[in-house]
Length: 261
Image: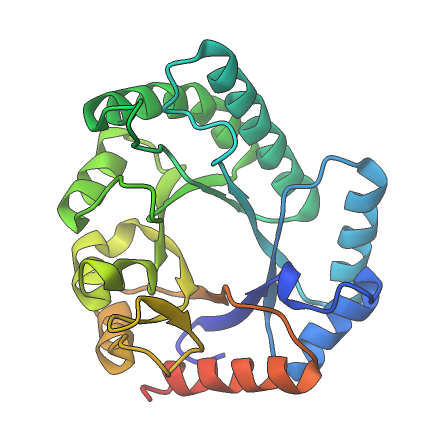
């Protein structure tokens, strides 16, 4: 850990044929400081993950909820209600696993959902979730994804600010903006709103995600920007999975990013 930056990975990157204890121990062995887990509703599975986390000393720092299946921007009240209930369950899961963050895809713009409607509906529905987030002390972290929404850093910043809660912040994905922007610019604009960071790399020429340090992300500038805005916390790789050698290599790539490449 350097300058308060910690290496993490999503749980799905670890071999699924291992027990939770083995997966968490492997994450620690190859050099990771934290894990981001999917939302879990089964009490026994939550217990096993929590035990694996405590045994290994590797915390679950965030729940990668998403929200594509039941967007809070939907015009269908039943879809929205399901989405709200699922985010509530994810917040509760985070609390039980010792995490302080739930990643949320806030809205989806498509042929049936206008941009303006997605903006207002999703904010209205996130406001319904804030009391529970405050009670559990779990941050709802809105992420920038390829959902045709929050397409500029200025708008992303405004969207978060308008919700007026310390429990709604930004989950910034470094690779996702390369298709239409520059990661370091987004970081400097979002500033203190950034609560968590996802690491991916992207090649503009082929429009493909690639391994860290193999795409067009300007990692040196990203690292400088993170320092400038005072970001301290987890840098979570969101990549394909693999064996111990592959995972160790990913951890070493993150070390290079933290060191300034």
